[in-house]
Image 1: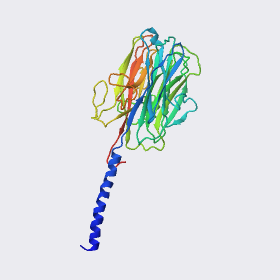
Image 2: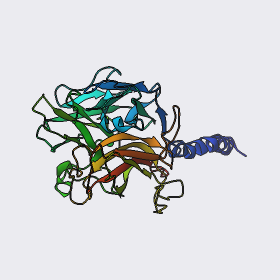
Image 3: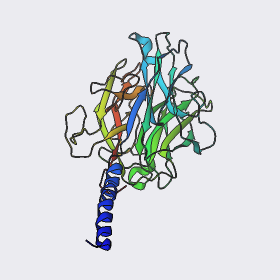
Image 4: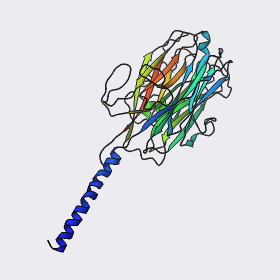
Length: 380
């Protein structure tokens, strides 16, 4: 073999491992994953006095808040009719709220606040617990919080709807709702759900339906019961979105939704639960329904006490102004809230209560917002 041929032979042997390495690089990208961990503290007790509120804080040590929830202990006597959710929202520091100017109000948030309030009944046995959904993925390293708000409601037995929309080119990850002040005992958020800022969804008034993908907005509905004058009543909507510099290609969010009738009898409550698709593409809801789909990760959820048909005719109030939320939280398939440190929760549960009076034409609504990472060779 002459020197030139020998050199070609040696170079060929050297280049083979390099070629194999080049082929392996797409496989590294192909293995990209996302994880969600739930953090939840011990319950915050109260409120023990009427027309007041309490707050509960959950923090993400790892990852960023993609959504969050709230759950309440309400007791068993008639005083439970006065305990209601006052809000569930991202926080800049776990102490303060985003309640100033609208628009982009925060970035890369790691804190979540849940609020509970009392009406004309209160008990030291009441409690409120916060749940933060902590998302970790190299694909979403930055997030932003969009806040919108509306005055009211103030008229008896009325509601106000407000929607926060993600900036163009970003992805909705979750959201929240808040009503203030706590001193107006029948004022509370009665809905918090994903939607779209388009005419087909009445610009957020009609909720995202089961199976819809990539909603871009989050809607909050504030409701009020008996007559209260204007005490600077305000309803807030929060949308948690991917950061402006995050490339959302190769990712899809899918909505899973369930609506059940009730509760209609005064002094009673019920739950509704829905889940993301499992590894085999089966939709994990309590009806046992199956649907084809990709592997999905629960990143947030929503809940509503409504007049029904929220995904087809738009949001309407329940039959009583006292109907309220007692929870919206990550759960197991039976509707039990998950514990601190739970990884990859699969279900979301809404807890609805009729209050002290009969509530005809009332429905319980629950949403799970699920993230799919499309692992296609050579895409990333």
